[in-house]
Image 1: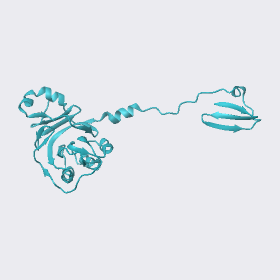
Image 2: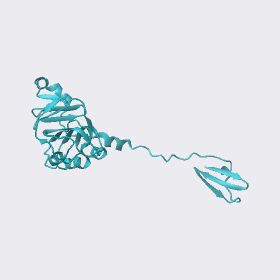
Image 3: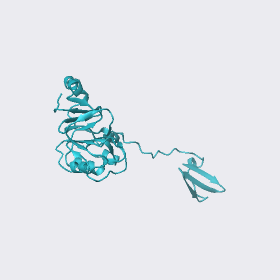
Length: 225
């Protein structure tokens, strides 16, 4: 705070506000010597606890992919356990998830994807072979929430998603090549429950998928460490 005198008038400066006062207003001596007092900062401090909790994520996979690889050298050697090429970005609150695989093959059309995700998931993982197209999205925020509500553990998209902020707020695990705001076609063209080749690996319906921050594994059998 500062007290200024000019042409017989007094002005009190508080931060960025100046208040004119009557010339015969009396102040204590300490306020008539142009003293300046630091004002407390009003800038809020970041809530590091809340931020950490927001990005901590959840883990639904019972085992870590690195541990699976270290403990199953024989399965890796004979091809019963395979790692997908590291092409996918992570979305959703579940950083790790696993489950029996349901496959669907489409191209820039998500009608069959919606049909499957609107059915009971029972802890399974939907693997969508979108042909690697990044020209439109096959899964959006509403569909991800539907999948979560129907009990799907996760979604892997060989293609794009959209509504990224909504999906990141959803309690489900999602992997995709990237995002694109354009919606897909609605012609119901594609195939369900067929073998698909994604990220260098042939994937069959009813195999098992394990995903975490290290990557994605496909196994012919349910695994434990």
